[in-house]
Image (cartoon, rainbow, N blue to C red; front, side, top):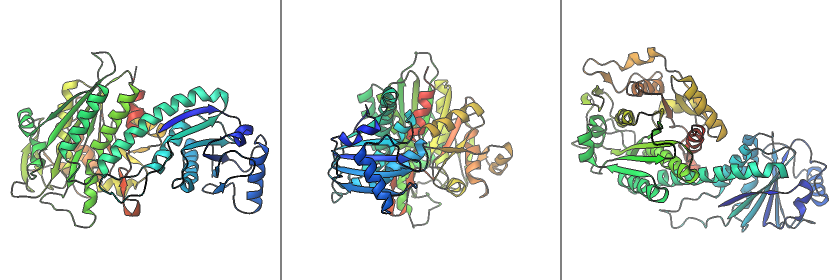
Length: 485
């Protein structure tokens, strides 16, 4: 998709020869500066009750009189914010998705544009045109839309073009994350994730390693191995290194949970909606997507990505409730519930991260249903004891329209993880389940600045709209960019 900005005043919108024109109107009236045919059309549509200056309202007009664009959509925005602009663009794109427009011009009248509006535009277009087809030959034909131009004032053009370039890279990363997560578990295996990482390395010059079981045994990742031992599918531990800063600069480390299918193991999940457990590698997918965006944008910062990838399956070899395993850190873990497996693979990756002497480590995981109960599907859960790191991640989420909400990490929450037979149990009780999961991970991240993102409620949607969202690629990319020197 080609995204670009163009200096076009409100009075020139009627002369645009694009296939389609989407006009977002902010406020409770059409500006006086609009050219006459467009202003007259809006006035008449409001008078006839076909359009109103209320959020969510839109109107499609085919071959509008006095205008060169063959298709016109009006969409009302509730405010001038990027979030409101994105909602309006999304509503306006609805009637255009199935049509033949190849070039769309988007204009916002009644408010100035910022770089945040560029992120909003690209995210809205990306959501509208994305179509999963890999295992669905009968899927409808993809959108023909190939070029999107953001009309703007002359003094806004340079900033918006920079914002569009950044947003386009994020969009490519989000698309990769969605493609990886949407593939069924018999397609998106640990080996497949390693292949995606190696392909990114070849394209963008990353150093990539994909360790097999023998190598992981040699490293000493006993906790990770315990989860993988019940599956016939080979595990992979993926290490990606992007060198954008000075050689000795401490890197940012991203750690993505890569459970490519989660049955719960011996603690078997209920059958209903278990198919959605193919999305349990959403953390790994988002890390791959963020690295895709980073490779395109080339920020001056060093980044390491770590992805422990395996299946969690029941078998005669599978780990059992009550088993005790030894993690890479040397700490022993009593596995009370084999369905709390994500933290078992992440803890060894967090210990492995120590060797990079990182400036900060962020792990990303579809970790707990408890986080979905706490935050629903709006915000990802953010856990960290570092106020500066929390502020940076929250700001990155706001900038990328990919928000998070900070959750507590008080020491008292660790009480439920005590074990009579090991250094720590892998689960506590039901109360505060997302927090106790984070407290478990915190034990293995004591030697550096660390944050945990629980994306169980945001990495995918269920129901009729079932599919991966690509979150939190935007948050991670904006965070990494904020760390560049």
